[in-house]
Every structure is written in C-alpha cells, then in structure tokens.
Image (cartoon, rainbow, N blue to C red; front, side):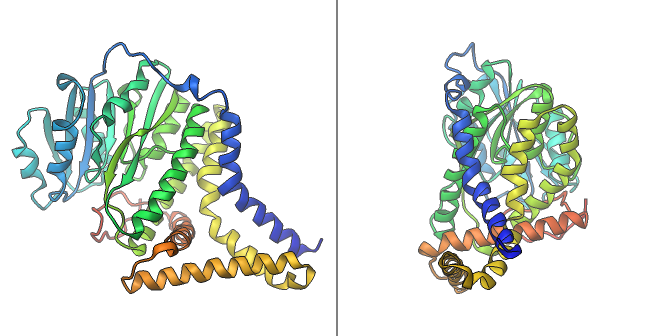
Length: 389
C-alpha cells in the first residue's frame, strides 16, 4: 500500500469512527445499563434555582419567565429564578422588575461576561439544584420536573436536557436532525455515567458542586468534568427540553460554533490533565471522541480529498470515493449559494450545515491557539466584538 493510500484510509477510518463508530460503540457499551440509569421513585421535589444570564434580552425575557414560572408543573414554593443582567442597555432590567411574581430576582452587573454573570447568579441562589438555561430558550411545561427527578439518586451530580428548535426554515430542519443525532450519543454516554458536554440551553447541577467559573470557561462543558472529578454521575433526559429559534443563516451558525470550539479547546487543554491524574479514562475517551476529533473533521476531509485524486488509477474504489466526495461538496456549495441568495435549502441543508460546522472547527482551534475565548456574548443576530480571554 502506498503512502497516499495509507493517508487516505487512515483519515477515512478516523472520520468513520468519529461520526459513526463512536455512537455505535456507545450503544454496545451501554446495553443493559440504560435501565439502571433511570430513577423511578422520588422522595419529594428538590428546591430549584433557575439561573439566567441576560444581555439585552428584552424581546424574550418575559416569555422566558412565563415558561419558567407560570407554565411550569413544579411546586411553586420550591422554584425561583435569578436573572443576572450583564450590563444590559435595553429594557431587560425593567421587564424583569415588572414581572408579577416574587420568585424572580434581578441582579445587575457591569458588562463582564456570561461566566461572571453565572457566578453572581449562583451566589444569590437558594436552591439545592441549579438549573442553567438561555434567555431565549423556553421550557417545556414539565422540563424542570424531569430535569430534577434523577437527583433522587445521591450519586447523580448533573442532568442535561436538550435544546430544540421550534421555528420554521431550513436551518431548523438540518439542526433538528443534528439534535436527534446528539441526543442518541448523549443517551449512550449518560448510560456510562458521563456526558461530553451538557446542553447550555437546559441542564441542572447540584448546588454543592458549583465552583466559580473563570471568565473564559464555558459552563456546559466544564460542569460535567467537575461532576466527574467529584465522583458524581451525569444523566441525560431528552424529554426535558427547551424550544428556541434556530440560527438565521449559515454565517451565524459558523460564528457560534467558532466561539464554542475556541472555548472548548481552551477548557480541554486545562482540564484533561486533571482527568488523567484522577484516572477518569472513560471521560477522557468521550471528550476526545465527541469533541476533539470532531474539531479536526475539516483537515481530515481535506487530506482524504487530496490523497484520493492521485489514487484514481490504483483501483475502481478510488473513483467511487472521489465521486462521492465531489457530489457531497457540490451539494454543500449549492447550499451555500442558496443561503446567500435567501433561497430555501431543502435537502441541501444537511451537507451545507455539516461543512459549515466542520470549517468552524479549524477557525475555532486557530482562535484557541491565539488565546481567543470570549468572555462576553450577545443574543442571536447581534454583533459581538472579539475579546481574548
């Protein structure tokens, strides 16, 4: 086998493992354990503090509070909301203050970022369980009840739900397929007592496990790691969900993933050694397979394409693989053109979305290498100047 063939089949195997083999392996390892991960009995609902970090969320904050309090099937006296306004300049603060429910508290801070806002919110929280969520993500009526139920098991430290997209459009169709794929992976991971990241739109953590976040640390990736290091298990419930609008276009989705990957790479570089020292090998395997390997998808795809072309004369299989790659990239390019023209993507959404996220991996790792991991953020659709950690 030539050197080019070795390169081609190595990167092909790596891609196959990352996107297909890892989920299948999780299913095999989790067989017989899913039932043990469920908790069917409760001794009473725990007290819950919902933490919302908000920056200029005036358009959605009232609906968020409605979904958290007025429409939630949870004991009234065991639920509170702490909204931390991170230097909002719109009417976010006024809307929270006017909200007709004394279970809501507003904390205002100067514009310092999401993680410091979460630290402030937790410092004010009184609940046994902390629920972290986004201001634009609306809770399903029984989301908090489902999210907190597994804490009846004292060995459970974190429970993740999932954020769904409820608006129409092609971005929703592609992203919803991706959400289902992610849910199946998290179900397998949770059966093995860990999740490679919680869903930032909806997850819960035991209050006693919370430690103040550094400004550049992304909470939904770090908290499962900290729960694992403390000896606690993680769980996932796909039926504990929120609904929010999808990204408006591929550019917005690209920027969002670049930010997430840059923060994730920064965090893994810092925390993987701690997991290794604690011999949390299963968690390391999941983080590398579910996160790190995905971030290098684009270089692997490029290497496969470059190696494939000179191999055309080495056998018919290489003609088939090159044709498949060419077709996939042509569909992605057509999706890019349709997105720029404001046209419906239809079946082009999936290849376009996949290539967009893969390209974001390169940009995100490059940003992490430069030390860039934003401490501040902006609501969907608003510009955010870059800020190094």
